[in-house]
Amino acid sequence: MENFIVSARKYRPTTFESVVGQHAITSTLQNAIRTNTLAQAFLFCGPRGVGKTTCARIMAKTINCLHPTDDMEACNECESCVSFNNNASFNIFELDAASNSSVDDIRALIDQVRIPPQLGKYKVYIIDEVHMLSSSAFNAFLKTLEEPPAYAKFILATTEKHKILPTILSRCQIFDFKRITVEDISKHLQNIAAKEGVTAEEEALNIIAQKADGALRDALSIFDQMVSFSGNNITYKDVINNLNVLDYEYYFGMVEDILAGDINSILLLLNEVINKGFDSQNFIQGMASHLRNLLLGKDARVINLMEVSNQLKARYAKQAEHCSTEFLLKSLDIANECDINFRSANNKRLHLEIALLKMIPVQTDRCPSQPQPVQKPVQQAPVQQNEIPRSARNDSVPTNNPVNIVNPVQRVKRAGTISILDTEPKKDVSDAPVEVKNNPFTQEMLVGAWTKFVETHKNTSPNFVAGIGKYQPTLKDGFEIHYQVDNMLMVNDITNIGHLREFLSKELGNNQFKLVHEIVEKPKDDIAYTDRSRFEKMVENNPNVLTLKNGLGLNIDI
Image (cartoon, rainbow, N blue to C red; front, top):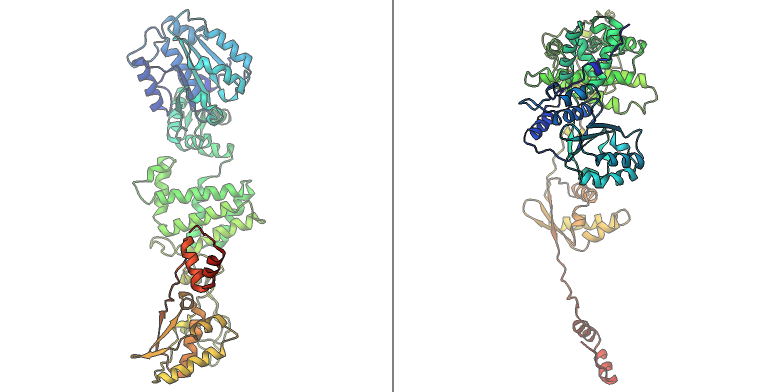
C-alpha cells in the first residue's frame, strides 16, 4: 500500500511564485536577491500556516542556486538545488527553538557558523519558533547575529513577535506575514482538487476556507479530511455536516420570518437550530454576519467585501432588496448587543429569543414586493346597545372597553422605539393652553408683593430671599421688573426664580411681566501684596502701630 502524503506537504510551495497570498513579501525577497542587497538576518512573523517557514526554505534554496532564473527562482537542476530537494544540503540548517531552547544549543550553532560553506555561497540557518529561546540563549546569540561572517544568513520565524527581545529585533529585517484571504485559499483548493481529480462545489471550498481562518495549512488539512469523508465529490452539504457549520438557509429563513413578523416561525426555527446541537451564541454571531452581508448586498460597489461565493452574493443581493437600511443597521445593533451580554445572561435562550423578536418592529418601510403577514379573521362580537361598532372606532373615540388593545408592532412603530414592551406615547401636558393675565400694577404693588415673598420664604429658601431682599425691584415700561443681585448664582437658581415668578403672577394678577436681573458690583479693597503696603495698611487701621514702632526704636526692613 502506497504511503499517503498529506496535501500540506505534497503541495508545499517550492518557488516564490507558488507562495499563496504573500506577493509583497516574495517580491521584496526576489528583488533583494537580484540586487545582491540581502540583510544578514531576517525575521518572518505572522499567524500559523501563512508561509513563514516555506518562504525561508525557498529563500535559502534560491540564494545558493548556481544558476538562478531571470525571475530569481531556483533552477532545481544544479547540484545545490538537487541536494536541497533530497534533504541532503550541508549549507542549510533548520533548528526548532521549541525543543532546542537552551544556551548550549545556541553555542553549538555558533560553532557551526565558523565553518564556511563547501558548496554554494551561503550557509543559511533557519530557526523556527524563535520566541521559545531562553533569555540566556538570546544573549549568547546577540553577537553572532550582529556581526556574522559574510557567508552566514539567519532566518528567524515566529508566531509571537512580542516575545522577542528588542535587541534581537533591531538586528533583523522584519517581514510581517498576513492572514491569507478566503478568496486566495478557495482558489488554491480548486487547483489542488483539479490535480487530485476531486470534484468540489465552489461553496464547499469557500466554507473550508472560512473555517481555516487565514491559515492555508489548516485549509489543506480540512480538505484532506473532507476527501476522506466524501470521496472524490465534495459537496456543500457534506462540508457543513462534517464541520458542524450552520447552513446559510437558516439565516435566510430567519430574516424572512422577521420581515414577515411571524413570531411563531422565528421561535420554531431557533428551536430547530438549538436541537441540532448548535451553540446559541454562535448562531447570533452568524446572524450578525448575515445581516452585514445583506447590508453589503444593497450596493454593488461593496458587494465584493463578502467572503462568499458569487452564487451566494447574488442571493444576498436579492434578499437585501426587501430590507431597508434602517432595518439592517438597527438589527445589527441588536445582534451585537445580544452577543456582548450573552455570557452574563441567566436564561441564554430567552436572551436570544428576545433579541430576535426585537428585530421585528424595526422594519418600518417594507418593500412593496415583500409579502405582508396574513391577518387571521377576527370574529366580531355582537354590537351592544349604545356601543360604537369596532369598525367605526378610532383613537380619539372612547369605547366601553376599559382596555385599548393595540398590536404591539404598531404600538412600537408609533412610539418610534425598538422595545417590544413599549406603551402608547403620553400626551404632553405642556401643550395645554395657558390663561393670559395682564392686569396693570404699580411700583408700590410690586414692592409689596416682593417684600411679602421674602417674608414668606425665609424658612424654605433663606439664602435666595436674603440675596433678592437687599435691593428693591424697579418697575419699568412694558411690565419689566428689574431687580439687583450680588452674583449670578442667584440668577441661575431656576427653581426659586420659578417660585418668585409664580408668586408675583398670583399677587399682581399678571403673568406677562419680564424679570430682568442686574449684577451689583462691589467695590474691591486694595490688597497689600508687599511688606511696605502691609505696614501702611496696619497704620491706616490703627495709628498706634506707628507710635509703637517709633517708641521702641524698631527698624523694620520694608
